[in-house]
Amino acid sequence: MLGGYEKVMSKIQCRSSRQSEIEQLKDLWEICFGDDRTYIDLFFKYKYKESRTFVLTTDNVIAAMVTAIDVIYTHSGKKYPSVMLYAVATHPSERGKGFSTLLMDYVNQEYSNRGVQISVLVPADKPLIGFYKKRGYTEAFSIYEGKPLLYMDSGGLFVDLEPVDADAYNNIRTAFLEEQNSILYSNEDIFFQQNTAALSKGNIFQLQGCDGTGCAIVERISPEKILVKELLIKDHMMKGALKTIIEHFAPSEVIVRLPKENPSIIGSSRVFGMAKVLDPSLPLSPEGYLGLAFD
Image (cartoon, rainbow, N blue to C red; front, side, top):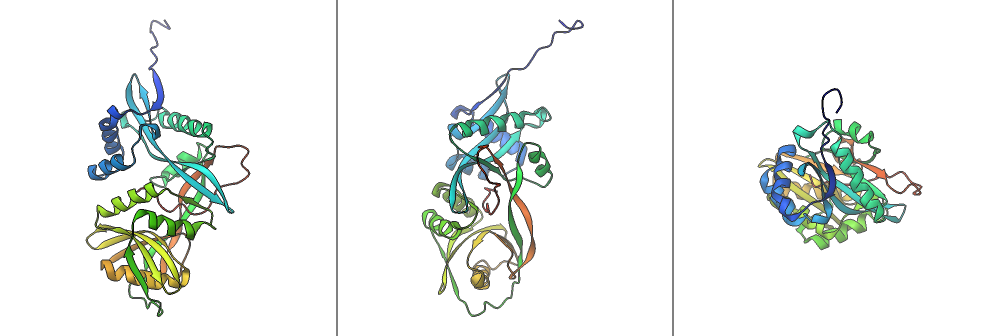
């Protein structure tokens, strides 16, 4: 007893999630992010596993959650096992208590124990960059985002657009990025991206020209607007690729994300992802292209 009052401490536990908690996790996700339930159901159908979705409970009630996705970070030709933290969520009534920090630290330690060397994440909005910096993350990955010149001349370079399966897309993507500092994904992750794009009548594509092969993921944001979520192709083929995509989808507005600046796009670079080195013996500061963020 202190001053006539008894201090009762809540029992806080970090652990892997359980199959029986899926509906609670979906509800928490919807409350925190406002995502459409169709997307949430899709994520849990293809990406949920007890072993990679973690929760923090207080008095046996879920207060926070985070999903961990295995990825590979390539740097100067070397590959480093990494983890992407996704859907970091704390129930509004439990915020301000440090629960997300406790859970992220727990997950990062779990993965560090498994030999994972780097933790990455994509802040949902700009204010969260400062939040994650205080937790040891640094600005590491950027994208160039903007709008193409809709009526540009393709420069005589014809580029064909063809839907492909996840394995074929990932083969093209990995070959394109293998010499760059970047995040590589599994075929399972690309398959999920394909299904996400399909929700809006988008798809994943191979881009084929006489001078090389590229790839693109396109989602329809509205009947008139598309997001080219990823576009990987040689610089001199960019105009032809954009022209083909625009002709295929016939939008009035296009947003394009690229690994770097290109004169075919009017836009700007911005921070897209952050990283934290989990292995103190690792002599590098992660930077480069992350690209896909399950957003």
